[in-house]
Length: 200
Image (cartoon, rainbow, N blue to C red; front, side, top):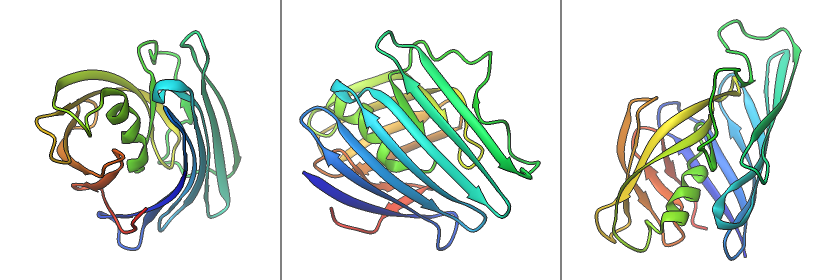
């Protein structure tokens, strides 16, 4: 089954994220775009079984510059990156890729910045869209957009009841919200970040 999703980013007028998802029994493959005032991004995401990230490839493009990241997780749980930059890079952007001091050994998922789709992987793995679940700490390979810097992000997911709400917090980014999700576990409303504008 394929589905198309669109979100409007709430902090930047006319900025949006789209995703085209090929659903499988226990995973998905997806591609999408980010459109913002100073850059655009295109990405492809591929999952292994049980919603575990296999690879994420993303290119961000601004005026006179672009950069790309290929982020992969192998069968032994090791994360790898391949990065590149072309043009005069904005000085405010950090270096793309995984820094030497970043420990992703406990991470099963990537978390693509500004993209609500990547919240779906832990939600589906834990079954938060179908059953109550105590809050569980997780580590994510969080990809900042548009810099494509990768950090280890401590995050917390839970579901107090089966009512389409998932509690979500991030210690590294000072986020603490309740996500509204649909029956597939895909975000409808991420307070302060994005609202879905399409019906899949």
